Image (tube, rainbow, N blue to C red; front, top):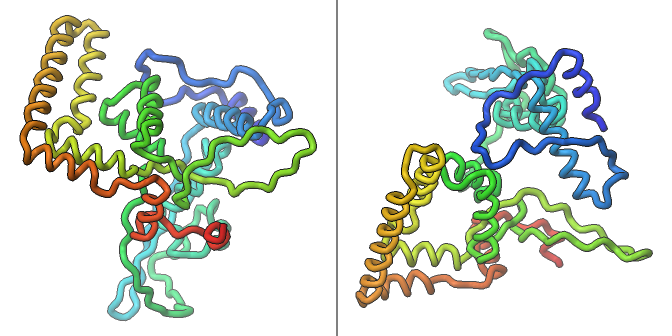
Length: 329
């Protein structure tokens, strides 16, 4: 594989101990244990998983990717134009994870709006496009009118990162939490075009020819009407029941029990009492005609099948328009 040169470089200069990360005692890092080649795997998906694990492992032992952010300000009469770019000074671990270079260049501003070809030709440059005092010739001037777009839906890995940052779940349990909300149809995982992720196709039968399917990129967690209505319904009764700090507090207490800082019995009794009181309060409020009406209204508002809900989101600009070839299907 093409990461062999990077591995040889690491062995020649000495292994660098990875920095960052933390051990919570659930399992050791995922580490490749045997050399394999593409032909050793039954499917391309299996190979891609193995390849990513190997690349990530080698990258964790590599030196850092170093770059410099350069900002430019160009004066045109009374108007100041601003641009920026990222200059790669040391490729580091991106030698085995080359897509990280593209991420750095995108964060650096993409070279003052230069096209893709121009940006690719400069991605390894360490010299700024301009120096202070340079004169710049304007080739054309045009005004673009637009409006700000809302941020995209969270991707699966972003949700896991937020759960980790807020102390919700462990490395071993986070995937279970995410899978649970998917199985209960509170969210649907979609690609960058807003189409639900297809399940893996079974291998073709001998001699069977199947048309290739469009490659789906990204795993965006799109809330379904059921998920949103459930949250709004509980919020109408008790706002605290849907707040992530409750689960985070429980996780902290469990960790403190494991570390010997808290005793299990009083923590268990306290949490059981808290949930019992919450249940009694929830039940009492459900008996309140106004509160139960608010919950019923929130639960029933906008309940749609997933496909219709995604279509409605697309019409409202919450999801991108489908490519023409998909609109015809």
